Length: 532
Image (tube, rainbow, N blue to C red; front, side, top):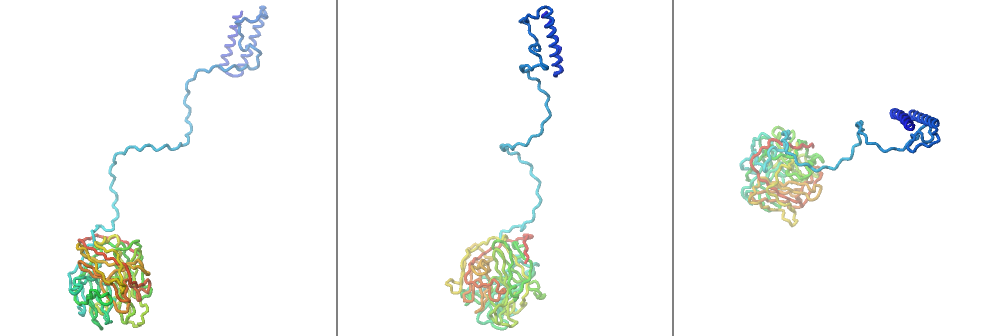
């Protein structure tokens, strides 16, 4: 009997447990509970009928859990069973969203050097340089005459024309005058572009040569009496106004012309166009042209030519110089030219302009173009107030001098320092080009460089000055003013409307010497042009 009840019970429970496994909801559990209760009641009735309802169940008889205790509407939750075995890994889920960028990692160790790559293609051709072909120095002149005889006080024969026939205006011209005999025998002196003295004052003398040039020829004037005194000499050195050392006044000499074309002479760094400039124009007779190199030029050349002077003078160029050797205080004085100086930033120009003279004669005064009374038998004589001016400035393309002195102090006027000085050249140096630079130590032109001159022209009682020089193959001679009216730096009283004028007794001086080498044609120049 007990076996039968157990089988009945197990069958019922198995039936409903299978349903619970399949459905797994509260309704199925309730049905199982009801079934258990009905089964329990049926067993109790069976036991009562057999007279066993008072007998405790045998010890091996265990009721199903649903028959133990009072049943509720929902079965109680059993204790958690032991965990089952880990199931198989399921399929991968969809990829999650991209996370935020992390911090950069540390720089790795540099890898080994790779193999050399192939050579790249040739780059484009660069712009043309300043000069197509560098030169080792200043070349020989494109034109150089032989030594030619010229005499002062010889009427029309004191004038000479030398044809260079270059067909182009030279950028640089030198006219050398070589002494024949006397204390300066063999020494050479350089001509200038205008005269500061004439034959109208017997108490002194003047000398040297004046020159101008165009595309085919060079004109040269030596002193010659016109209407007063024979006081001009082609070689004139020393004398009472210039220290007296190696005093000489002779009428015979030799001259040589040298000319360089723009394609031969080193390229200038800066040039101006031709601009108008006038004498006797008050403060407008001074002009300052800025070049802004930021360093002192190696060379400055100022060329100027007459405007509306007629066909005989068309395009004939004169050159400026470095000191005034006359002022406006001498009666009937004919003086003129163009004085210039330079520093690291500009070039200053002074043309003649009347200041405080008491002479009112219309024939008196200064002219920017002045080659007339007492010169070359009055051949091609000219005085003009209006000129066209061009400035050329060199720095990078002028080589360093083959010889240069240290800067030294030069003084005059009874200061205790001899106004004369000699400089010996090394035996290996040939002085093809000589440049004397005079630096102002004070005044409105402090730091500016004025250039020495190859002539000595002055009149007692007038302001005059500068440093005059001549040279042989072995020695350079310097003369400074020695009278009370002379000054080493001098541009005053009748110059530039009295703008930035000065007269200084002391200055610093250096002498530079270049040798010329070979013949070159650099083809073209790339030069800056500045407006004036």
